[in-house]
Length: 129
Image (cartoon, rainbow, N blue to C red; front, side):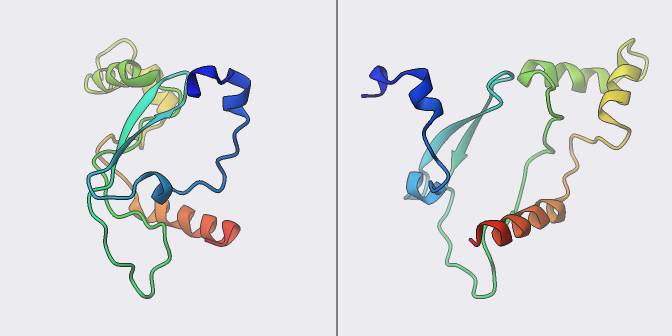
């Protein structure tokens, strides 16, 4: 029973062979995922549609997004909202500090799909997916 597990037992579970298809088995199925326990980024992962596999496609492959990923250690949703507010106003007293921290090229609307797929291809080779 999950309520009887200790923190050490939860941290020592080997999830390396777990696939998302073990968790999401039908369309519209949903799981919750927490990324970065310190900043508490909570995500709903929804299986929108099950498609037939392409003959010449190696999976996983990234197909779409809504926004760019927030910078690492940006303070969770509230810290990220503050960061975006600061970046909207170059006159803000924190603007230069924030800009130097995240770099000139950060754009919350921009996302490089090809870079993500390159990482996936490397993972496929490493893990022989």
